[in-house]
Image 1 (spheres, one colour):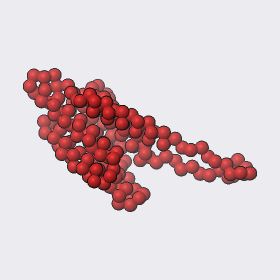
Image 2 (cartoon, rainbow, N blue to C red; image 1 turned 180 degrees about the vertical axis):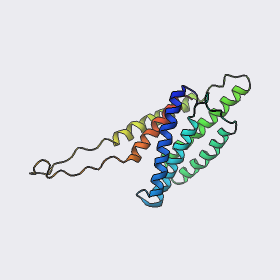
Image 3 (spheres, helix red, strand yellow; image 1 turned 30 degrees about the vertical axis):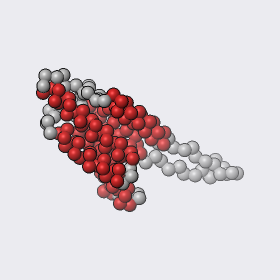
Image 4 (cartoon, helix red, strand yellow; image 1 turned 120 degrees about the vertical axis):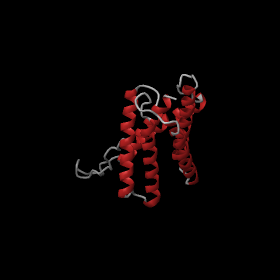
Length: 187
């Protein structure tokens, strides 16, 4: 990833932790059966791919073929997401393919006397940034627990309904959206 090394390492830790949690969650058995476990595995792949892609380029040498591996893997997952009608996963895969293609042009520019910096399409980058900004805020708002409700005529504390705590998986999605937003800023 282009940009400050500290930002890259923070993204690596954040995305690797989210990916590891999603993998554990898919093995333990996410609610919703096999379809939900498949989605959770897709999120794990996305998070781990983001962790690898966020490795600072100045610290970790990037093989020339790595960008094409990202294009292949996330191109396939994007097709799967479209076929399974998971629009968020499809957008995420598109964004990963896009960033990988930007990596190939940056590597080609560095190899041919260019500056090697990122050179994405401003309109596409802007649309993806807007999508992930809205998704991060919306999923972050869903993490706020609803206030406890008192039943009519009850003593405070006696009739309070338990409000479920936000699921950690939702927090991982929010973190991944913020991570993708940050990575797109480097494009």
